[in-house]
Length: 102
Image 1 (cartoon, rainbow, N blue to C red):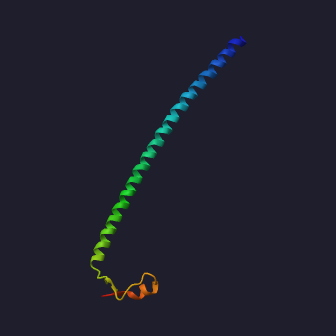
Image 2: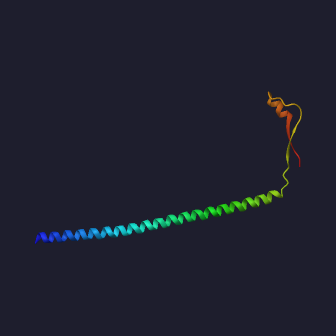
């Protein structure tokens, strides 16, 4: 009688362990699917944010170029007078002067 009862308890134990294993596999599969969905969403969100950034930079660059076209920035022209000596930095500085014309 004890042997039969022990075998029955062991079979119940094995059955419960099997059911728990199946439940664990199902839950693990659900978690993996959810993680994949989150990863896909994150990649899509990054792509969306990058697209917004590029669009903003394009708009900023366009507006800057329009603004700068209207500006009259003074040109800088070098005036080189006299001889330039390669040996003396002071001679080069005196010989080459930068002037701004408005």
